Length: 522
Image (cartoon, rainbow, N blue to C red; front, side, top):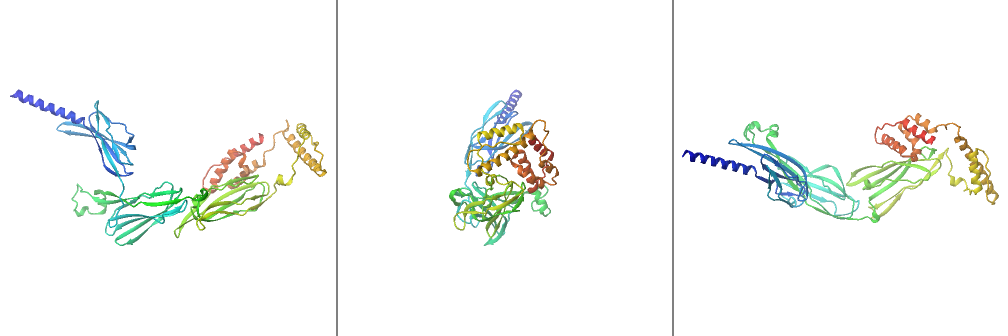
């Protein structure tokens, strides 16, 4: 009898051990949501019980990338039996209904597979009239042109007497649209609802038929939970401060309707739509040679002023340095109005004309392509050279003249024999004068660079750089040399940011001087 009882005890113990081993080797997979809206996250959790668990490496689930993983571990002791439970959670955001395949898990040297699962992605349902909360989306018009603004209003309606502790509305995020939030929200009453309106301006960038998707609002309601320190109905615990410790927020999603919008293209691939005026102003019309004239281009009006592109001027024999444009805009009586401003510095050694600045856009008033332009501006340069093309005739050099010039440069002589073709006497005198000037110039350079003549004196710019008292003065000094190389352009860029953008770049003047001295020596 005792032997049978002992065998039975051993048999039961064996069953318990075997059962514990089988249970420890169990593997399961679960998801926290079986139905979600597009873009919502889902947590897939794989749990295994055993001493040594190797979870699979998962980077995608049903085509959706795994956004993150986390691990957890739990130890359970029941009647002296110790069980180790380990789990790994994979977070992903399915874009469509997804079938989750079985995954392999190694538990204590044995491989187990999870059961397949599925997550259904459902289409958002717009809130209906009469519900405690309603979210409505409305466009000011359903057909616009590229660049033409359309107003989008989001109306969040909350029935009077219905409480919402937190409201989070996600602003629209659209491809091929530039979205501008209109600051401030409006509140009003509509029947039984308190209405809060959030407004945005949409500027389409490409033509086509668009569906503006539902906008989501998260409604948070505070839910009290039982405290271990007292019952829910205890007045001692019924105050806002204590409630923050014994309550939590439950969230509910609220969706708006969708909206349709047709966008027509602009002619000739234009991008700016509106009505604008343009003007060009200079700080001076007379300037000394190698000193800058500051031109300001201003375009002002209503429309997508933010899409106006930077202007570049082409002025022969002049250095042109264009700043980045600045745009200020605001809403006036429902119209988006703004001002585009760009400053351009121009440096030259002779008189020049700033050409008309042209801007082409699609005019909202005439519904036609329109080009507006500034008037040309004549600039008088004092103390500089005249334009070569306007003041000196073209000299046709004979082969003999070229040989004489070369010999003069080698010998340092100051006279050059000018050999020209037989022609009009007036032309001969012009050739003779030109030859003498050219010979004198060659002699001067030959004297400067012949061996033993010593080092040339530094350029006046070097002394001026050392004497410059401010970034502005240094900026004006260097502008004429903007084309001397990348180094000067970089210095000008840093100076510009110091002067106009509040930067505090350190400018090494010795480095600038070294640059110019090396140029002279070269």
